[in-house]
Image 1: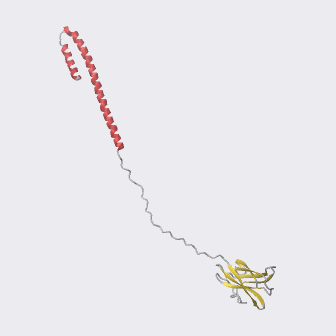
Image 2: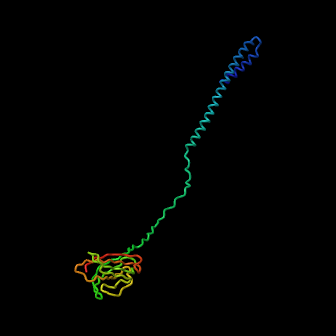
Image 3: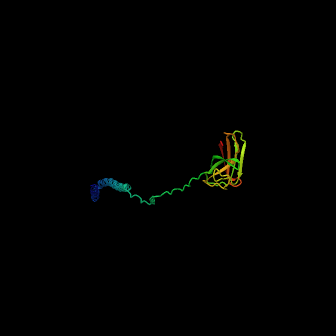
Amino acid sequence: MRTILLTSLIALSLLLGACSGATQDLTSVVQTEAMATLNAEAAVVQAEMALQTAQAQNAILQATIDAQANEAAAPTSPPADTSTPLPEPTATRSIPTNTPAPTNPPGVAVRFEATFTCSGTRMAFFSIRNTGPETYQSARVSAADASSDTELGRSDGNNEFLPNSTACSGYQATLGPGQTKYLSVKIGALPPNTQVIARIVVCSEKGYGGNCLSQGVHFTP
């Protein structure tokens, strides 16, 4: 509408310019007003065009913003799993630990058996059992009055082991693991009910060397 009005004013101005000199002043006035109106209308048109341009730019900017927002909100595929899978557990069988069989510590068990006379001498006999793993090759036996500690007799030697409790001879060289043999010692004639103590030492080597064990036995002949 404004464009049509502007065109009409221009045509009118040109028409008035063609009139006679008598109306020149009036024509100048009309032309001046027409130019002012034309400038004003042009300014309005430019303002509207600038507004439309700004609106178009705003629409484009908003569309760009909306597209970026939609793109950011869109779900993304999860990243591929690149981890190395753990190996499946395999059944294991525990191997039992070999436990060595218990061994007995070195030891002997001594017991008074009886008295016996050998070649006119009264002897006391003792059984001795080897309860450990060692072998004994020498023995020493002494007997004493328990009340006064007076020695009654002594038997020293490397072959002191007897085969039984009444043997006066036949000494044997060793006492092996688990074996039971006998020892003897002179005690002589004693008053009745005399308490006697026998001290017995056995060693793993001859001459009372190596590992030795000792044991005391109280008895009444």
